[in-house]
Amino acid sequence: MNLFLLLLALGLTGASPLGDSKVCQPHSRPWQVYLHGGGVSCSGALIDALWIVTSFNCAPTRSYSTIASLGEHDVTVEEGTEQHIYVADVIPHSPYRSSLHSLTMVRLAEPARFTQHVQPIPLPSRCPQPGETCHVSGWGSTIPNQYERSQRLKCITVPIVDDQTCVYTFPEFLFWSMGMVCAGQANTDNCMHDGGSVMVCDGQLQGVQWYSHGCGNPADPSVYTKLCMYNDWIHDVMDRYAPTLPTETTPVMT
Image (cartoon, rainbow, N blue to C red):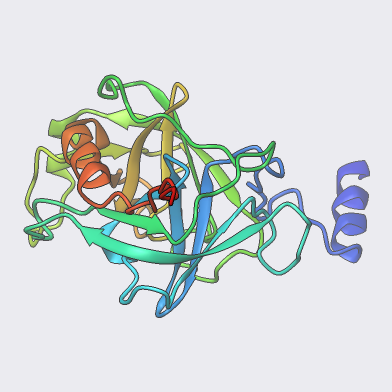
């Protein structure tokens, strides 16, 4: 009887103990980036004052048409923690083939200012291991087969799944790539409807979302780009596309 009264009271106040909560502790993911405008609305991860990593599907279509919002939690409210910076360069992994690679580097038009609410996430120093617990965050629904975007950043906890299990659950039209890693399984959190959602394991960036299989069937793992395989490419892009800074000149004495 007491449980019934509690449920009734929660229903009258608009709350539900069974709802799609999974809202992150505000600003607990200071590397999370909200990319919006120019045909995109998804997530990425800040890895440097000038650079963001995201998936191929989240790649902005044109420079200076997309804004990267850093220090975000509720994307509908200005909380005073945000930095809104235009995207200057977009470099997808080349050549792109959906069955082989899904990775994009995004360069900001100006450096981010590191604060309590804006911090980069380290690139992986190792690859994730089956059974390891990781954390995924993004501005998407965490309810299977519901696609409404979330105003507030969501967080789920997922286990890394071995490659063989992942391949076994793939749809027939997908092919396995060494650049993939799977996470999530039955009876665990396994759905994040947000292109480019970020997977962090042991304090390191280990993945950005590729395919959200767990949102169609919670028993299936979702697929992430295995970032430990791309460290060399990421550093090469950062070197090749580094902005040219003006050089100081010494006035000529006459």
